[in-house]
Length: 120
Image 1 (cartoon, rainbow, N blue to C red):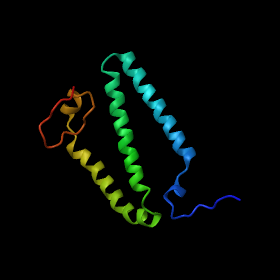
Image 2: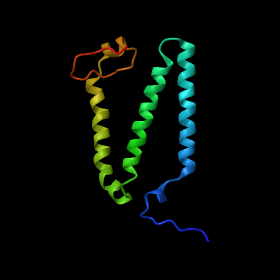
Image 3: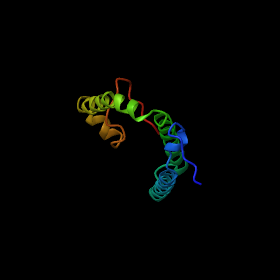
């Protein structure tokens, strides 16, 4: 007899097929980043891979936090998050600096109110 999953269990909301697909896409993305940087010869491929892995880990932590909420809680905070997103999109219109974008090659389009520190 098949075991019924309790809706209260956190693992009952996980779809392992999607998780596997996302992990495979992440690996393909990391391989693409590695190959493009090796081919261009402009930077250290290991540094780029480590930075990408850090972003994957940050995203995984974010997903682990969001999965703890139920649908009602997510619907309650959705308008606030939507408003924050719209505010940030509008902020780009006012904070955009063409000189910073030109000097950094489009890597940093917005100069925040701190001194510009170029990254190597």
